Length: 441
Image (cartoon, rainbow, N blue to C red):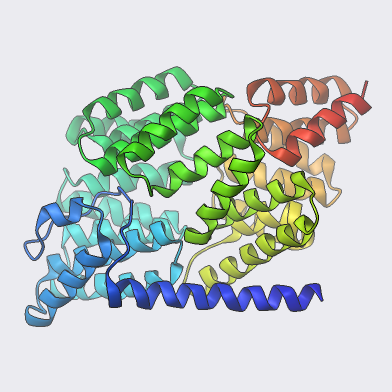
């Protein structure tokens, strides 16, 4: 029965993605709240690109290219618009369309910096970060002031775990092309290195300079996430409210608000909000979060509802891989707690072989732990927290692994630290941390 249920849900996820792909262009009615910078082409009114109406932008580009098929800038813009649509819709089937458009742009003009920067964005979206870095560097050789390429270079270095280089890249980008895309990345590099106040200061500066609705919602949501990570739920909810005042449909803010509501004890509104998010944005993280909210509530039928969410995660991962997305980190994180533990470890090892970041170290540590390999897990758990990044989940994982290795004092200290930092970091994880502290007295 469970396997049949998973198969049925997998089919539903695929059909949903197909409907998103066909419907977005056929009707052009949906508005996307994404704020990633889009290269301006002479084929499209720049105001249209800034409006966030990607479906209309794509339709306009397609119409233009039917009459001007050798306009490489427009092919590049179309490719980047597809990347953004894939990101904001949670629809990886857009990536092959982006790839075709960008290939066409580079066939027409091999050194087109817009197309090279868009290739970097596409590679990053597919989690091919070494390739993203290569394209970003090539684009910057053609145009040292390309905001897209500067931003993608920072992203790639961060996701490859090259944090010192990412910090220097952020400094350079700030000198060459200051603005919201650079400010938000600059802040994240600071946060990863433990400088929360510095990250907050940069984001507040970005918010004070933001003028478009898209930029305001994006930066306010980033400030909300930063506040939530520090356990400041009131500030988080205030920032999410500001983001939603700018764009009431901005999905990251809706997701963040639901997460902050759950941490504040408002479970009913949190579940309602997260249900809305996954109905529009069926990506692994909100699906897992909704599943855990159901498990935490534990009302009649909630166990089955939770399993449905985890099954949809598996379906999304399969769909992502079919469209060229490296989904090993998503697999490891979801499967370690809610799926095939052996598969989680396999995926985490594969991801660690590609890149050494705090996130991959944490995923590998936890996958090793749930597979009973705690001695091997401990160095990775400590590496995940070594930069000073204030992430309660990472610290919780480290504490549980330390307890499993017999390091009682260190484990208890880590669990207490995680709960002090963000007592609502996870409805299930926080409960487990409190129980482990009680049991280890």
